[in-house]
View 1 (cartoon, rainbow, N blue to C red):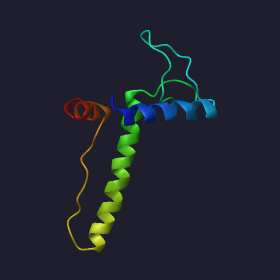
View 2 (view 1 turned 90 degrees about the vertical axis):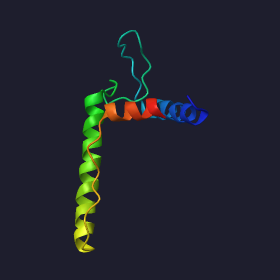
View 3 (view 1 turned 180 degrees about the vertical axis):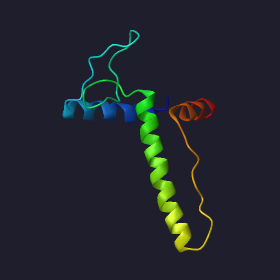
View 4 (view 1 turned 45 degrees about the horizontal axis):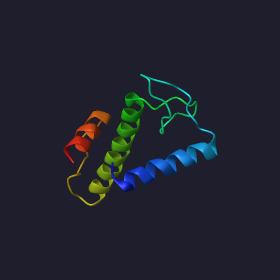
Length: 92
C-alpha cells in the first residue's frame, strides 16, 4: 500500500469518527471497516456495483446528449464492476 493510499484511508477513518459512522461489525474475523453504510455495516460489492452502474449511466447520458449536439458519435463508457476494479488494482 502506498503512503498516499494509507493517508486517504486514515482520513476516511477520521471522517467516519467525526460523523459517528463507526462499524462494530465483524465479518470473517475482520472488523474496523473503513467504508460503511449509514447503518454501520460494511459496503458490500453489490453496493459498489450499484454506485458504479449509476456513474456510468449518468456519464453515458450526458455524453450521448453532448455528442448529439456536436453532431458526432458518443464515446460511451463500458460497464464496470467492483471485480473490474479488483483486476485493475492487481494489474497495477
